[in-house]
Image (cartoon, rainbow, N blue to C red; front, side, top):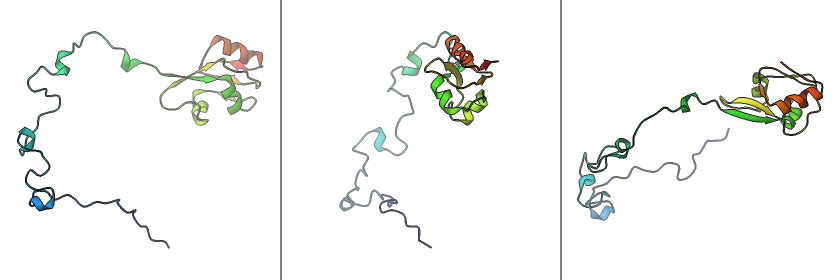
Length: 143
């Protein structure tokens, strides 16, 4: 059985600061010279701009955003359906996800890009009018 060995440089020792000038990180310990950030407990909170009115308070927050309710749709072409499905299969949201044509929370919409040669049944998926015509012309149906 082979031994598992971590690659060289995977772990490094913690830098110990403030142990004399000869150590390379003595005296100011890598914090620069004087100032607020050189002190223990120094520094300012996130978004602080030195007393100037911060950006998050300068920008007006008015109106309504529909962003949280946005529905993402993923376009699916007819040639992708032709390649992924066999004759007589049903195209639905679940089968599209199983075949990897749509991912995440996106909804599918079938567009008329390409040609279809197989007889498919489309069920519960948004479809463009021209794509519906092509599927019906190939002998398929839309529910």
